[in-house]
Length: 454
Image (cartoon, rainbow, N blue to C red):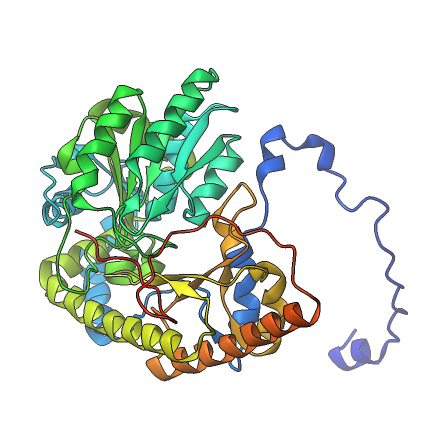
């Protein structure tokens, strides 16, 4: 049959679509732990927030415009040309020896004295977090985390059927007294607390930094209650004044597992992170990496390693700091100018995020569709808690949009908030309860920034 005669044959009539009798016939086969796997509120926003007419203040994508793309293209080509038989091959689950040495140089900027053998390279720090949770948490174990906390961490904890207990923060980060009370209460109830998960520097989503004076106290508390500390520090080199804080790992290397990443200081799409762990934990992490991915991508590690060896990566980080500082300033000035009275927010000294608390009676999760209709997107505070809190909070990200877009986004958000407040007044008030967030102290009538941290 010729092509033309085939084209002339009549098509079979389309069959009408009929929905399956059972939406997911495999449902009964799933492991019990899948019950804790739910869609992230923040991830669900991406398809909407990526529309060009929507100003997205929701996502945490780093701005890569300052990267030397042509130079990186040439670097990658040289790696493949000169070392392709190695760079495109399987490798050790432990990670590239040279890259592990270079990671020790990076962590030394935060006072960490590490040995390359104690570094395990991962596919982003999220993989490291997931593996650490797998190694330590049985169903029903307790993980203590700041309230609010990073949504990716909460997803890992719940996927492994751990129970998250949130501990209060203030403008100086995690509150030691609240941590001690939570651990005491868990011990009295016979609950097994395995981990403290903390983001000490430029917190996601709260934007605050753990005061230096609290760090040793928090480590002592965890020692006293036999709790391992998991320090997640992707933003530590992005302080706007160039200051770096002493890592928790530098103060107690035997009881701190440190998670690091090149996603915020180089390129997130390469998915190269690491775990710095005590030696016993390191051995199990290597085994867990083998079962999860066999080995981290060899080419991606080679690109990061060559970049660190041949480029002024610290100078590039400084350019990132300047970009994010400019955008932070645009965000704060817009909040001051546009948000209605009664709103408060934190004042970050680094990182990507501002944490906003709105007046009582506004439900930020319920308000989100109306904000998207007004062509602005944010992340509701409910996505950063597992206990139902966060309904009066909003995470605003300033890392990706240009300053003018940030100002326009805040202006649109303010209009939505004004409408919500007016609707509440017209309805005689709203019975929505005030939910816990990061505290801030009055400074001006309209802006309530968190205090500066040490």
